[in-house]
Each structure stands twice: as C-alpha cells, then as structure tokens.
Length: 393
Image 1 (cartoon, helix red, strand yellow):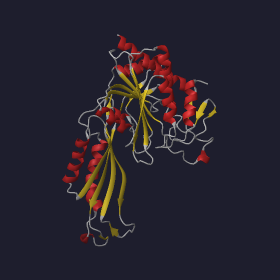
Image 2 (cartoon, helix red, strand yellow):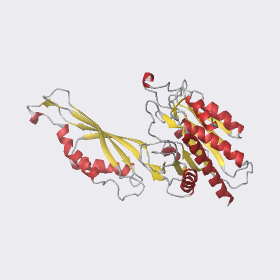
Image 3 (cartoon, helix red, strand yellow):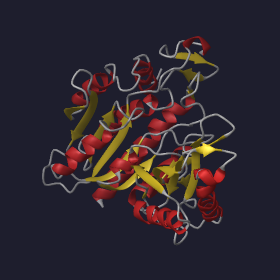
Image 4 (spheres, one colour):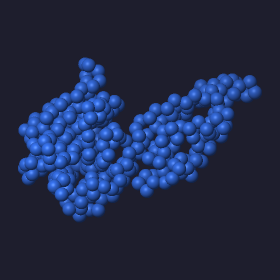
C-alpha cells in the first residue's frame, strides 16, 4: 500500500462532517512539522464549535534565495453521508472493491490532501534544499457556509502582507481520467430576491386588485430573451460560457384559485464570467424592471467573483506535469460551480484546480480508482519539480 493511499484512508476514517475537522489537520500537521513546516492554526466562528484552519509554511533555508510561493489548498471537511444504510460499506470505513477505494471524502477531497503531503515528502527527498517556498492552506469550512474558512485565512495573509505566487486547489476536476481536465477559472455567482408588490383581491374583480404576476411578466420575458441571446456580456471570452441568468423559484398566491396575490417573490441567480461585473448585471436588471414600471424591491447576494488564470507559468507547469505522467493533453475549463479558489484568487495571480475524477462526489458510495491515487500524487510532484527548476534558471 502506497503512503498516499495509507494517508487517504487515515483521513477518510475521520468523520469530519462540515465544519468538524475531526482531527484530520492534526494528522497532516504532524507530518508537515517533520518536514520543517511552521504550523499555524487559525480558528473562526462560534466559540463553542469554531472552524479549524491550518496554514503551514516551509521557506528556503537561504533567506536570500530567490523564491516563489506555491500553496496547495484544500479542505478536510466533507458533506453529510446521507442515509448510512444505503451505503454498500460504512462511509467512514475505507473499503476496497473492484480496484476502487470507497468512503466519504475519497474524491472530495481527502485523497487530494493526502497527495499534497506525500508529493511534498517525495519532493523534499529529491530536492532537500528547494528554492520554492511551500505552503498548505487547509480548512474545515468548505462544504459549509464558507465564511469561517479559506476566506478568513486569505484575509489574514493579506493583512500581514504575505504573497502567494502559485496555488493548486485539490478540487476533483477530472471527467474520465485523472488529469484530463483542470480548472483555470470559475464563474462568479450572484443571487437576487425580487419582490413584486401588488394588491390582493377577488379574482372576479380584477379592477379592484393589482396582479403582481401580470405586472412582472413582461419584464421577465425581456430578461429571458437577453439570456437566450447570450447578451449579458459586452464581449465573449474564449475561456468562459456566456453569463447565464436563471430563475430558481417563483412564489405567489394564497393557494386559493379565486384570489389575486398581493405579492410575488422571484429568486434568480447569475453565473457570470470576467466580462461582467456584479454592478453591470445589477444595473441591467434594474433598468429592465424600471422600464416596465414594475413596483418592486430587490435584494442582492454576491456569492463569489469570477477568476481566470490565463496560460502562464503555473498552467504550463501543470500541463507539462500531466503530459509527462499520463500522456494526456489536459483540457482547460471554467465550468462547474464555485470553490474556495474564488477567495485565493484575490491574493494570488495564478490559481488552478487539479484533482481526481469527480463523478461520485457527494454521492452515496463515493469512490476513487486506487490506481489513480499515485497518478495524482506524481502529477503534484512533477509540478513541484518543474516550478523549482524554473527558479534555478
């Protein structure tokens, strides 16, 4: 059994349902300390049950050496298991079947975290005095609200002037084989809660009421038309799908078929590229509603801003590492939802996400191909070697 597999199983056996770290970071910290890392635990959230974040750093022994900082970022928390009786084996008992490792977190993302550590161990064995500054940023609040985790650490680093040059987030990004896709960006997310005001009344006397559904329908039709035409962005971006606007909920009425509702509440969400901003999208929506003379209030929630890492030092190092290890020409993608990379991108100019196949994440019987665990570790190792060699000129 490889060291990466052993460590992955050790982490999976800890029931670290968000926001409980369940001791995972202590296990990882003990191994990192033996490698010369300085450990800092940053807690945030309720005093009786705080979120645990680990910031671990190893700097070159030569303080005058030219260095760049590479951060491996990930999370030790997992989503709830769902009905345990529906699992073929217990979700927190690492189990092997048909060449696969089963357990909650096998894909998302305890195997990636294990591979971070063992790739660093192998790297330091091969390069005892690297030029790279190495760091790990681990949180137990990625699968939860995300307000006491990575964002807190990033804010603390920014406040003390810490700089990050490269970051690899271990999110499961592959589609069929480890390395076939990486994320070099993500779309932003912004939600709106639109409340349209009306006057409730008897449906047989519409002149004595004001139907908010009728009032907002023409505006919604225009917003749908903008979306269908891909018209939210001023220009297209080759790395992103067009910005998308979707209604997720529409609430109106009392439940009776003979009552005109007094209000309507519409929940919607934007997934937007770097070609749009929250301000530009908000202004566009307000302009449409105002043009149709809708009587409304609108509350906005920004869940995350988009980011994009164009091909450069980190992307090229990752592409080359994947090519050398697997023979795959990896695909760059910005698809999917949000991740903690959205926080890291604010303090790091080059961020990518690279991890295992994502087909079983958050599912019953989550699993990973055992053979691909060492592949992932070796890709991380090759990235470390490439970036360190580049510093040597």
